[in-house]
Length: 65
Image 1: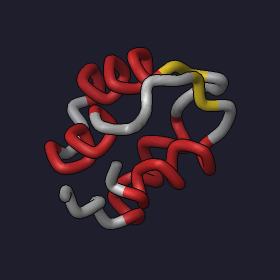
Image 2 (image 1 turned 180 degrees about the horizontal axis):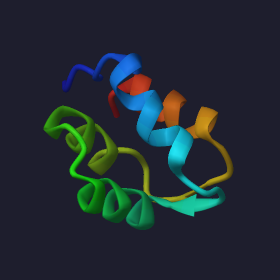
Image 3 (image 1 turned 180 degrees about the vertical axis):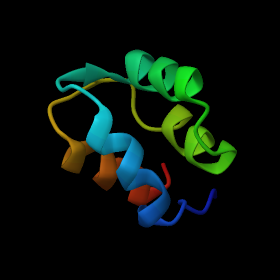
């Protein structure tokens, strides 16, 4: 099981995203912005769906899918 990244490392990125956003778009934006590797890995394993807000993404990242 993958350990989720520290929420303080994820929050700045998630605040800049325009919602709703798909997982694919979320990962693409993260790659474009050059986010930390640990954060990018966490985003790549969240469920493939559309996220309506920052909290939904945060919840999935915290679970460490």
